Length: 136
Image (cartoon, rainbow, N blue to C red; front, side, top):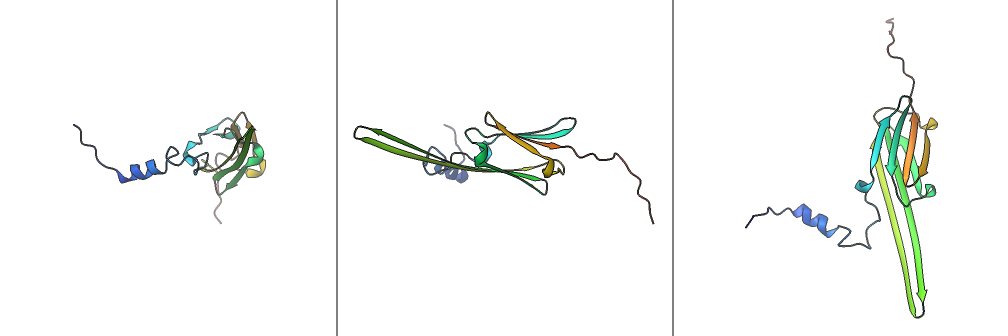
């Protein structure tokens, strides 16, 4: 027989898991959104998996090297068959904040949502490799 250490935080997580209260929790959790950040020769690219959302449901903002992606969605579904009636409403929202590796110019950014992947492209700023600063 093995002795297992009791972790009260695991119990709290279990109580508030989607299995325990499936109808009361949002569709997505913040940690469920996969994010890839990579560089090409001329761009910084951020890709976020957001399946089931449309571009109108999503807001993207850059402030102080933080990229914030937020989304809200509401689906309504009604079924009427004979004396049977059912109405389902699903609401979901998410917020993902990502620290960018360096400053970017949000005015030149481009974003596109395709096949559940939000792709945000920032052109790299042209920075001189080195410059002498004259002392007055």
